[in-house]
Length: 147
Ligand code: DQA
Image 1 (cartoon, rainbow, N blue to C red):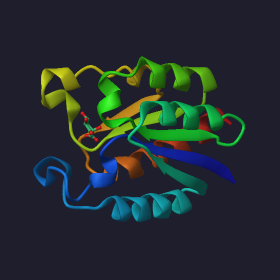
Image 2 (image 1 turned 60 degrees about the vertical axis):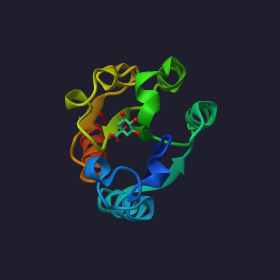
Image 3 (image 1 turned 135 degrees about the vertical axis):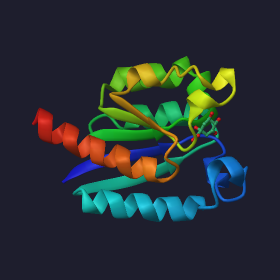
Image 4 (image 1 turned 30 degrees about the vertical axis):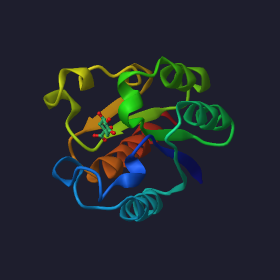
């Protein structure tokens, strides 16, 4: 069975509490349930990782090499700043899909730049938690196309 690593960056653990007008009322625990269910439906095993620390996310991406087949990542605020996370994604060269709960292109200008996007095979933004399900489905289709 193929394995996905699901990575969530800073403040995603605060879902349900943080800015519900933007990020909704679903909690991080609800999101994890949704992801585990979607992975099972699409025939993936999954491991979920969340950190508020850039280096910890880089470490986790590096550790994915040889252990996972693909990555779903919401780098959160690091999307707009982290060349290190983008480089780690390029280094391991696993198919990765970037997810954002909100539509980053229709928010502040500083959210319009994504360094990590260029290291991913797809980006899904603005669909709320359902975006993670779309990303998992996207990776399934990717594997069906490629293998
Ligand atoms: C986010 C968008 C980022 O700009 C923000 O810093 C986040 C969450 C999203 O999922 O919409 O923390 O990645």
